[in-house]
Amino acid sequence: MSKDRLQKILARAGHGSRRGCERLIAAGRVRVNQKTATLGMKADPEKDEITVDGEPLPKPEPLKYIALHKPRGVLSTVKTKDTRPTVRDLVNVPGRLYPVGRLDVDSEGLILMTNDGKLTNRLTHPRYEHKKEYRVQVKGSPSPTQVKAWRRGVTLENGQRTLPAQVSLESQQEGEAWLRVTLREGRKRQIRRMGRATGLPVQRIIRTRIASLRLGNLSPRKWRHLSPKEVKELKE
Image (cartoon, rainbow, N blue to C red):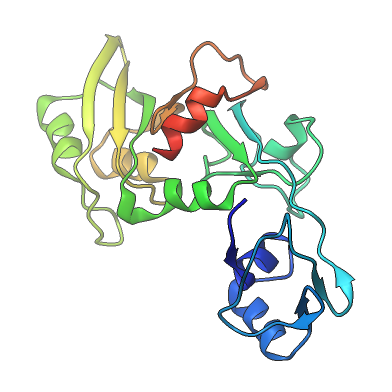
């Protein structure tokens, strides 16, 4: 591992936000190789001895990357006072692990679990506009006008306008249809809100892709480790 800013290393190790870790450094509570650390200092957590209040910083865990098929009724979080199961409950792997982004409790499909903070930021920061693909079941028969609205961008109930989406009709039968939807943003419950705004009530959402990572034939509640090739493609 290359050298990184000390506040980032401390934050990754669980000592609070980066700003909080900067305060620890400024207060003289952090030492690197027996010397009091200063703001702006860099270190390599695998090679340097870093202590906070005299307690050594644990060596960083190996990076883990896991694809999970989240079923309906499971929360996309790690810690909660809610009694419902979380995605962390489904992945029997020791150490720190958290979901990249969210799927609301009623939605299903692909969740990426990792302890790689740098990749998490890259996949969730709005400026990168990474694509996420969904299969969406709606009530009714989507008209060309309704589909065009999703493609052009929908004005939500709070006045915000969504980015244009890629939308195609996958199948249709009496009273319902399946759409294939690709978004470049991730507003809270966005697809359901787009459906309400355009008269297409959403009945089911299954996420099938995050950037280059695909759900494939992974069954609900099952998970797998990503291949080195998949990790490389996500980082690129």
